[in-house]
Image 1 (cartoon, helix red, strand yellow):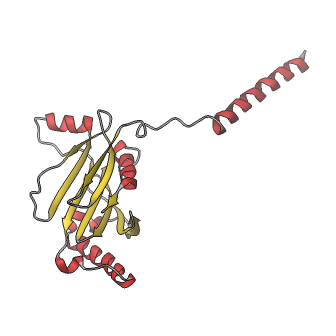
Image 2 (spheres, helix red, strand yellow; image 1 turned 60 degrees about the vertical axis):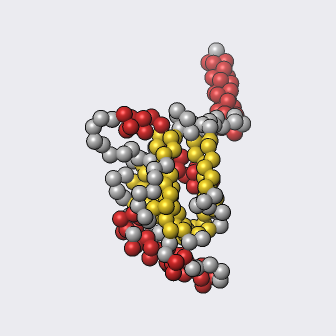
Image 3 (tube, helix red, strand yellow; image 1 turned 60 degrees about the horizontal axis):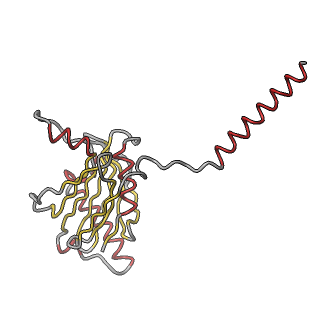
Length: 208
């Protein structure tokens, strides 16, 4: 009798292990909440940039405020739709919710001339870093948590760093055709929808 029980227990355990193995290696991964959302693509021929973001009630609302600062030529602000609705309907003064921003600045003529040879491309990064330091109130460059990385966005050299502030900030700075593009994701935790959506948005950025 004991042998039969042991055999039955062994068979049950084998079935459970087989099921777990099947689940891990053969079941198709369910799409994430971001992947299930509709995407909208923003294309600006005037400012030479495009990107995509999740839209709708469970996604983000795009706000395009008028250029009130001479330095900022174009602003795209993205907030979660529920967060933007709560902020807009608030009757009390409050901080704007964490969000995503894509800002376009114009470089001075001297700073804009850095194309062609490898030496000139290196100069472009140096000038971009100098611009970031000169405009620290905009870029939070002095609050960078580590030395910025030099990466590429759609083939364009860019600086990438994270900084402290009212919210945590993930920042990309790129210069192209006489403009500086500053893309920022503000968040509380890396598990936040805003942070994850920003990582996806960065993958869709294209310059023209």
